[in-house]
Length: 463
Image (cartoon, rainbow, N blue to C red; front, side, top):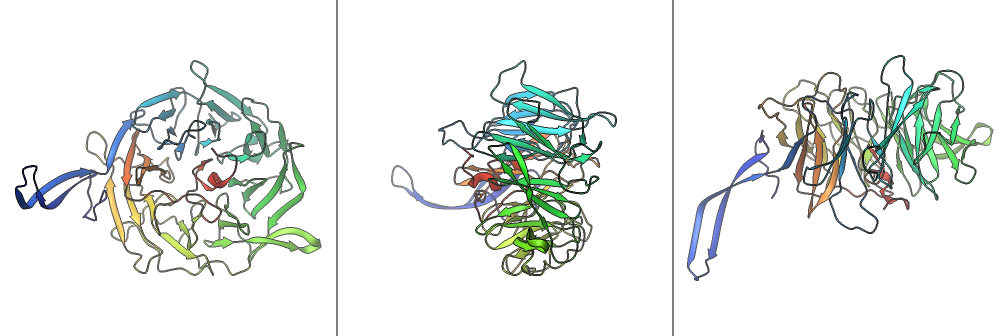
């Protein structure tokens, strides 16, 4: 086993007892019950920038066209501007590229061409900026900074795939009555579509998600889906459909999208997970309703976007508790799992699905854990390691990082590898026994925006 079920390895290493019963090359038989071996679940760690905190979750770059190699390169952004704050690492931890792209204030997004998008605000008086970094272009001009003057963008871009090109969609807070949504195309700072969506003009978007032909915008009233006309390059606002469910609940992040039939899931401001489906509302208008009652309420506000497989919907709350709700009727499988020993609340990342019924989370104190919240014994929690700085101190996250970034997971041999930035400028590659859950119409394994590692991996525009 690559990941031993032993008490809290604090440095990623563990000693296993070995029993051997074998013949040597001269046919001498030897039984040795006293051997031992030192193994490590940390493949490598790499310093990005000493003391730098991550700005959000990492993302995976797509493989070159026609390539079947794995794992992929990983892109990670850090807080700050004026110095290198965007880094691309190869699967062995070596630096491929780095750049100073202006402040990035959330997760980075990646399209199928390997173009990286990040959004942030350099100062209170500055407009939002979209940084477009083309990982296929050599130095010295690897990125384009784009002003977004009419809105304050506080959520990561969503990547939508259309026949001619992937698109980066930005949703923000309207600041001058003109626009609150922008659509960008590779290689251009000029949005080829910018609109004011049919919502309250002061609505602050909390996230965006995309499927093959429509964008889902999360906001304080729930969410709204809008079809995008790939030919006319514009939103079809007449076909907008908004959430109209049980009670009133806003969405904490972009909905997780399941199809067959299409079922957007979202974590509500009412501390419940909502599963919706297409319906017809007053005036024969399309809308999204809940066929069943929402899930039981969590003990604290839920974080961002939930993830799901064919069995359960998983979410975390502000107290660091991981929940698993049944797909069938939304019931809670068992009391939520707190991924720490003791009663002290501690923030955790949003979950990532790895293997069957397993989720990977990272605590604020830089402890990495595997949980099985949908099994009959949900307290089954394995502490993989506690990430430490070079000096030996725990590489915990600063107060400026509201939630630990959600790891990004790739296939590595017969298992997986999780890339996890800590709070002091290092990124860790942690070996996992099981491969990541493959994205599909019935699984959204990660809330991140890297096009082909989250839900969109089942879409035709992914490599």
